[in-house]
Image (cartoon, rainbow, N blue to C red; front, side):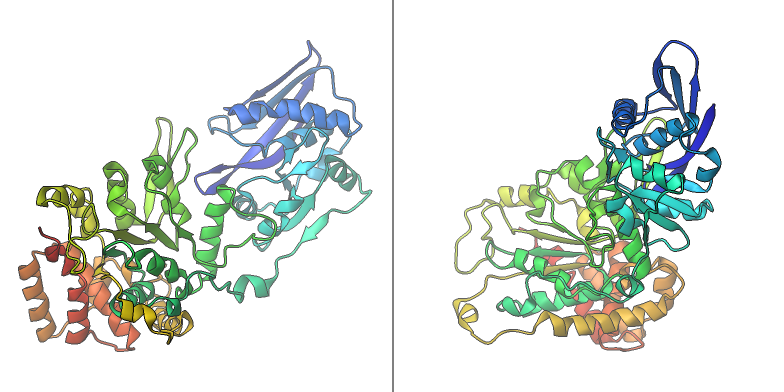
Length: 511
């Protein structure tokens, strides 16, 4: 008898429907899985065999063939264990075939028959909805995550026997229903460094407020101990909460990467990723034999912080250029190409020279001009051009450190950021653009109109600093954000002047 069970595999960040076809026939005992299975899928036959036996059922001593269709899609992961086991039990007559026709089933099996959690349940649930499958059975630990998708009945299982008894009508499986208040209204406030804890650095704080308001990239340059890392780690406390669509996008990526659990099944805060400078290009951008999302995708809709910026390998840094421009990365293999979203704020921090004290009036720099130029050349010009805001972070004086009065708290700054983001949300409604930094040229032309004085000012800045057309557009985006912070409809010369001075670091970094 041939049985067919619906399940899914992950391709990129989306699910692909897979039919598990099970055929048990007379012949020499064998257990074969076909349809481009990876090693983890091939090994499932041993887990399935042990799980069925330990659940109290007799495993057939016949020729078993499992076909994973479509056969031209590579399958990997342990989520095929459960549908394969159910398919075998249907072929044996333990479960009636008509009872499983409206179900999509996914889960890993332990040797004793327990159902274990898997990665990528949210994309699988979204696939079930697209495919018109009304019922979804997943591991108990993944039930909350799958319930985010409306229109699909999600049920969780803890043991293979629970599913057998359910399809026989002898018991019920736990149904998971998402809490709308949690999905739509709850915001988890980041517990990062509060801006009130940072002494001095008023100029840098202002720049980061603008960055958070418009989603702009920032490069901070200053000596060791000036507070660059502390400033970067304070940014999550002033970022607006993600919208529902953004939260779903982010959760899908984290689900595939296995970063969710039963208590954290929806990403309600913007990601903050801070990889070490020894990371490889595959670790940053994504890759592997079966491509997986890298740090740029895990930071999607959030912040990617690269400390000690020039210490990253040059090829790793240059690999950032395409995702910074396009908002996604495409990983190509011989047989296929996978695209991962990668729209993030890049916050980078670096010293002005190898010793860190070039330009510091209190401590002499021990680096030669050649050493400084070599150090800075690790960050290529095209990458530097993609940083919207460049700020110098000077050393904090003893007097500033000794001031007991706290600075402006993150909560107050965040209110202004939320106000600016609200204006942008209304401006870009229906366009799938969430901040000024994402504006394409046609929208820049529409929303960043300058008066004659502004045009003259920007023209002089471009000539003086030798700025590229990309830098020209980024200045306009930053000026638009500054105007939004003041709730101004039009960009004024003061907004433009402030945006220009955040690019002046391009020329001041000469040696």
